[in-house]
Image (cartoon, rainbow, N blue to C red):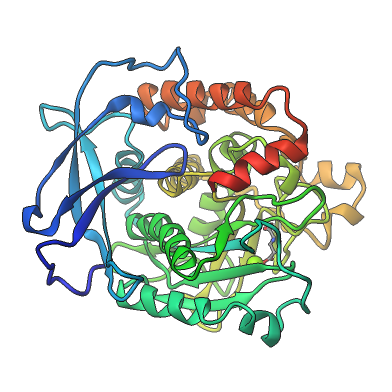
Length: 436
Ligand code: GLU
Ligand code: MG
């Protein structure tokens, strides 16, 4: 991703780890010492979004890791305030050089390999991020017309600077828009292979935060920013390709325009969706967003151009343009874990030759419970504890991940829930708003 490889000796390079909580942590070295590796602590993966460490975490004070920079995930944006934004994502390895089993990047690599080895397929993906711009007092902007030019101009020169920085860092921004809600914006990037797409998602969040900091603004990617407000989603556009790059999502002979492989892959996602949301919408307030009538995803449903469906089929003008949008994710999730989970679920669908996609005829909220049930559509979990239970109950989904990763993740999520136990929804939203 990196375009500018000259590195002034005194600039800091941040060796970053995109962890299970969705935060990017790490440490910096002076440019003159780079390239290098740095030491890391296994228990980092057990730190909750709010910074506490559960007593039952699998590591305690023991163990060492090393962060190994991946140059293909190295970005540098110059002219960003007084210092450059120079960040490289890393893989975590054990002292013997073997991958750390709870590393989300390793989990994604394993999913990509499974799809390539078993089905000779690759996923291309693009993450769309919605976020809310806050003023110095931490409140949302005054309402301006949704999607309007004046709403977009209200964010200048932040918007232009963001797109410039993303371009210079090779993050390939595509659209920058004022979204529906007051102060809500969206940034999209071009599709890329799965590892790069997840890397970009982690880096996009950080560069948005940093450009905002330089412009003395604050942003939050929290899935909800107020009770009853509009949610901030992370939508993941997915398409399937053969190993030599031929797009295979679309088949013009199919009534829904989908290939046999796409039908099987996305059937797998729908079948395992109640478990998957424990990884893709993993905060206590994610379930205030995943509700009916919010254009997010409240059901295990798919639909053509349907924004109430968890999977929105997006036809393209060309076969390469066809893709399917997964809408049940938000920025409290680790992007690598999101894509690993989606690819494994898709592989499972391919392994079993599933053909269970039944596209909704319209808004699921306008359909009777019986009609939804006849299509195999069920309500998604309505809280994080329910989602974690669904994940625990899905013996197939659990096998997609290393037991250490699952143990680490579930313990961290239970600690997070304990921290929020006595809080109202409004107070919970305030906690997430502050850290995402
Ligand atoms: N803000 C909606 C969400 O929570 C998505 C709106 C859209 O379709 O862009 O996912
Ligand atoms: Mg949007």
